[in-house]
Length: 262
Image 1 (tube, rainbow, N blue to C red):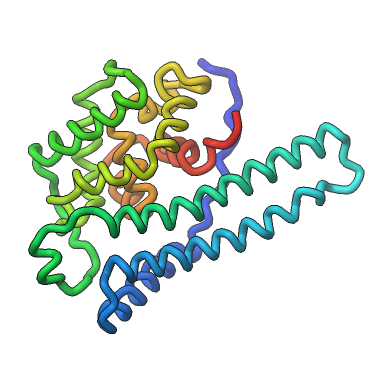
Image 2 (cartoon, rainbow, N blue to C red; image 1 turned 180 degrees about the horizontal axis):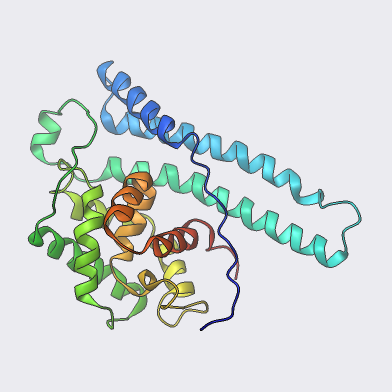
């Protein structure tokens, strides 16, 4: 039995998330009703969100010289490093928010979508995801994962089991085009995905498959995309059907907060 003491994870802030998601949908609907194209509406909202993150960055940056009075030089050095890492992470989040909106807007649209856009509505949940869809998404995830890691020793049966659940957080309307969405996400976030795999994946400096097996599995690419797109929906389907809550929590921490300087 391991005697190591695990540091408890910081509790997530969940007070405003659901209200913010609802407000975002409402504003998007109002903009589109006023004649704004869906892609432009999403880009405008992304810019506003990025601005809010930059405002948080400015406040965090002011903490660099505010270590507790009486702190040792070693503590001050650690304090400064932590502030710099957090400021860098916030900068990345702001840039990523706008970059993803641009990538989505630039993604090829089907002729039907271009000529006859449908009214925007909340995604329709699916009760089950077919094997064909799972295999299609897994093939893309494997290709991306192998290109980042060169690793092929993953458990494919486990991948299929997890994707059967994770893909339930993709709305019925998005299922058909999800492979293209995943590819666009990977292209826009290749550097960050590479950092994740290089740090926690096979052969990484902090690799520990027993602690979080997702870091060694190709479906992790899909989990990253869903964490950035519908984190609460993903958490809901995961917790309801997979007996591995800590795995998702740990992986979420790696993806959101674990990619600063080593």
